[in-house]
Amino acid sequence: MKTLSNANSAALDNQLFLSGRVWTPRRGAALLGAVSVLVICWQIAGARLSTVLQRSTAGALWTLLRGLFPPDLSFGFLRIVSRALLSTLATGIAGTFLSVLIAIPLAALSTPILWRRGILVAADEGNLGWSLRAAASRAVLAFLGFLRAIPDLVWGLLFVTAVGLGSLAGTLALAVSYAGVLGRVYADAFADVDPRPLEALQAIGATRAQIFLRGIWPQARPTVTAYTLYSFECCVRAASVLGFVGAGGIGYEISLSMRLFEYGQAMTLILGFVLLLASTDVVSRRLRRSLQPNAGQAENPGLLQGNSASRHGSFRPALRRARYLLVAAVLTSSFYFAGFTREHFSGAHVLGNMLRFCRGMFPPDFAKDFVLGLGPLVLQTLAISILGTIIGIAIGGLLAIPATSSLVLVQSDSPGVRSVSNRGLHWSIFWAARLALNVLRSIPDLVWVLICIVVIGIGPFAGTLAIGLHTAGVLGKLYAETLEEVPRQPVEALRALGAGRFQVLSWGLWPQAKRMLASYTVVRWETNLRVSAILGLVGGGGLGQAVYNDVQLGFYARLGTLLLVIYGLVMVSDWIGDTVFRRSVAT
Image 1 (cartoon, rainbow, N blue to C red):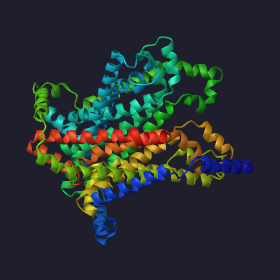
Image 2: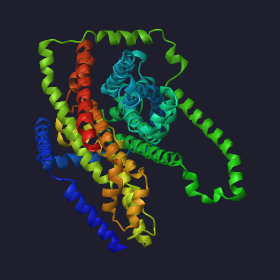
Image 3: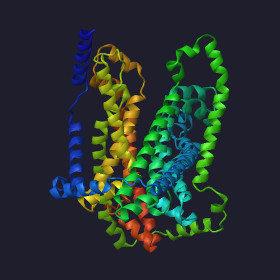
Image 4: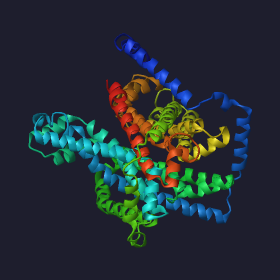
């Protein structure tokens, strides 16, 4: 068996070298362009490794760490932390639910295979009906881009102006912002399904709605479910950041503690938030496994035999009803604690305040001096997002490999895993990588910026490092989850031939997961563009300082211009992602 494994590995390596054309002039030009962009971004973002390696930086880091410990564990402060965590969790649940309700229909309307191109619309191309449907689909896609282009904090400011301080404004901001993110991811998932079942449904006269419900949704549901569960974690984390603008959650307490230099209290708040994110991670993993087809049968084959299966089946309707009741109770409680009460909506000026805020941004300010002055800030924002994403890809990719259970937690009878101590080592590596990813992504972007500013000083380099550290946790988890969810048959076949972990990763996991990994990376870069546009709120460079100044001074016309600039940046990143990254990975 080992000889066969070596022979197959050698054949595959030779095939890659001979027919894969690892090095071509086109790839060389792409590599040269990527290096040039990296160097330019490095200069614009003010990145200096010497700053990180200075003795003063180490001293500032030690001072910060010494202030963080011991955490404040007094009973009175723990009560404040508990209330803040409950508010954050309720805001995340309610915001996720509302964003899903908004995103699914918008994603279906923006799916190209249903309305714009492909075999389903080939017969109608060129006529007026097809042109109208295609234009409407593109308009919905642009609307999704607008929703996700505006940063969470700006949405928070808008809803704080409309409904006042508190968790209600944060929930509405998350619902609108993450509807744009989820809508784009859902649309990508709907577009990547196998078209043959869709053609069969169309051939028997199915409508567009029936094709979506019977052909697209069953194929895309695993991806939609996985990303929705991940989006819930993102919403919980974003709910903490919204506290910086008064939209409720634990972010208000963190910002207050940092301003008062109460690092012990800030450490307690961060630890509580890490624990909350770790709990949601465990819950989402179990939910994802329970939603996999035949998961229960594979884990409990004895339940499918004899009278045991029938007795177990008799309890399933009651268990299903209990789950529905539990979900309904959790949602109802979350909406209540998130501020969806009659008192909050009884005011007659809520919509009026929102309309006045929006009306103040039109028409936008296109004064020449103001627009030209945005050029350096736009370049700085782009540089921060690109360089921060690259740092996140590097760190997150390295941590994702040991955090992938299908690579590390193999069966006890697999080659090379024969002792209890060996399996214990693998478990330790897996959970250490998962813990590192949880910590990195649990700390909000703005808190990372504050930490980096304390250590290396104010400026765009602090924002770049903050985005890189946070993105590492986000992408590392997404990479690991995606690698775990690929079909297992090719992986088991490679293991049966005696393939090692690197060979399983290269030939079994990567070819199946690379398209979704590329999509997640591009979406995260787009998210980082929005994040880099608000880092100036706390001194991290980019467009954020201009946004903050215009909001504080009431220059809403200039704020409208800044929102259009941010929207344009995200649309450009969409185009780059569609025409360069995703297409190159697909081929």
